Length: 201
Image (cartoon, rainbow, N blue to C red):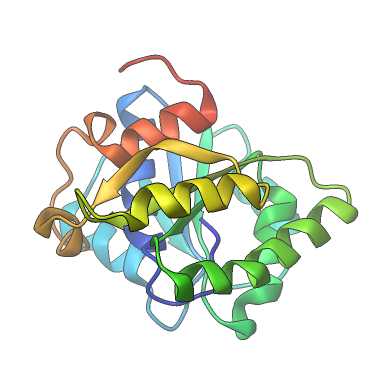
């Protein structure tokens, strides 16, 4: 999960991604790389889900994780930090990644901030990274014109805009710290499945 803007919904997306992959039979490791908030690891401790989680805030994740993961895990989900202070960590995560999910709300401010995320992803590619990316629209309001507008804007700007979108529902607003049920049957789960080419769980 990469988006250098704070409050983009990375931790919520990461928790649902971990649970979705676990429901698909993967052995999953969540990596909480956001030392300041540590939302993913707090969530993991609160709900004891069927996936593991570690805290690892480092700008050399791509070098450290192979030794940690070994053959114990089939999938790793990294919750990266926001702001320019997290750019080096996000870059390292992108270098390690096979898939990058970018959650973003359909608003002018959120989309303006995407340029920093794009710079990090482009730099990772220049350094040899190879990954598929997907833009997940979150905080979607049914019936509002902003959703379709920013879907098209994302496509015009060269993003792979995923078909699912996560609505502004209380269950997602209050998600962190609460149990995750049937993650693969949620918009987050559908987005992960589309990005990674997974069959229905």
